[in-house]
Image (tube, rainbow, N blue to C red):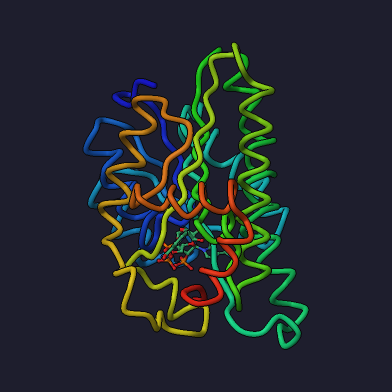
Length: 252
Ligand SMILES: NC(=O)c1ccc[n+]([C@@H]2O[C@H](COP(=O)([O-])OP(=O)(O)OC[C@H]3O[C@@H](n4cnc5c(N)ncnc54)[C@H](OP(=O)(O)O)[C@@H]3O)[C@@H](O)[C@H]2O)c1
């Protein structure tokens, strides 16, 4: 996918992985439309990268629709969507408040599906586009204490995989990128800091580098760091062994 001169919409660009991705995409010559909720941070990012800020609450389906319409209105078209907005919640599942379940499903799963539904027709009509979903290693392995978060990310992976099959030959590519532990505000916001020594958190810029290179090369499935594919392979081929190891070393 040619990034130079493309129009790229990045959700969750007001922080973390989305922010670093918007900076990388702008550096690679894209016109960026940056989304988030924090208007001050969005404005600062838009100034820094010469982009257009669009604020919106993605837990609200109407605002998801409005975000798509506003992006098309300000930029004329959207060639690349990076679905990075998302959040977590950590703790025992039976203590998870129902509104938190609704928020995670809405923001992490329903919003990227809704945004895709609104922006895909234009891409199909032009025979070109790229949809990049930021999923998570949690969705591929499962994590104790993050059952709903993992379920939303696993669902997003399944959506991306299905769409990839459906869009074969249309010129519209679909990528999924599964990060491990990344140094962002994600942990403080989920209500529980990252409490393990290993794996060490990696910088958001490293994730953004891989993400933008994956779009350019149309690499459809990536892990950052790359070694994360190993536990996924062990789980797929030897689930009993995987669960014994995860019981000793797993958790968030
Ligand atoms: N950090 C990690 O270790 C890690 C690992 C695997 C996957 N991920 C995934 O990576 C993605 C980016 O997370 P991050 O680590 O960069 O976290 P972050 O720094 O907390 O950024 C999250 C972004 O999502 C936006 N967002 C959250 N809830 C929203 C809502 N209801 N409506 C609209 N926007 C909302 C935030 O907007 P405001 O700041 O403006 O509110 C912010 O821009 C998420 O999908 C996350 O699940 C993160």
